[in-house]
Amino acid sequence: MHKLKKTVLAIILLISITVFSQKKEPIEYLSNFDMKTVRWGFHLGLNNSGYKLTYAETIDSQIGNAKDNILVSPQTGFNVGLLGDLRLHKNINLRLEPGFYYASRNIDFNHLIDDSNIKRSTKSSFLYVPLLVQFSANRYKNIRPYVAGGVAYGYNFTSNFDHENDFSNGKDAYRLQKNIYFYEIGIGMDFYFYFFKFSPSIRGVFAINNELQRDEKDIDPNNFSYWTTPIKSLGTRGIFIRFAFQ
Image 1 (cartoon, rainbow, N blue to C red):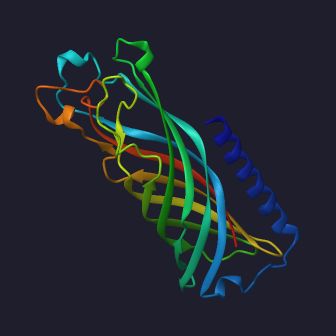
Image 2 (image 1 turned 180 degrees about the horizontal axis):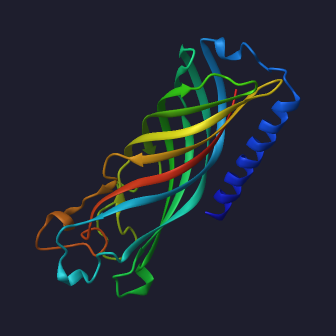
């Protein structure tokens, strides 16, 4: 999270320097760039991802005091990918931004008695494909703010969905879905330079479906899982910092 704060401060500093420079330099770079019907580029950035956890309504007393004692700690990851931009209107664009994302989260199951099984680290490498509609303000010299929103599909390459659901040794305390669906909203700013356009943005990413895969111990009323039975749903919540170049 500390690295993410430094990145946000760097973006604010860059914006301040660029806005100040507009007062001294009236030349508009890439004046016809946004008139192109289709544009291509690439993006890279950082993400800080965690989970939104919803507890089950009833929890077996044998599991212990699980409610409010399962804690998720977001971790910093990275992302890189390509982008395609289709001009629909002078202020509206359709954007496809497929990329590779690495995300990490720690989950503490503090209701467990055995300390060796309390902490679990979830590291995910996944394909993330958002389709966004971008609404841009009119350009002012070499800057142009925008807002964007849309839906996305993610495929988790590191999902343990196919693992045998025997968690007696605590090795695989829970299984996660391979296919995840998201909605995404964000704000950003276009900066026009002599050779390229630079577009930093900050996005909020939210999973729509439940990423937790139920197993037989959750379904069978005569049995239970210390890890997953207390949890009703688990869904990614993240902040993405993205730097796009066109």
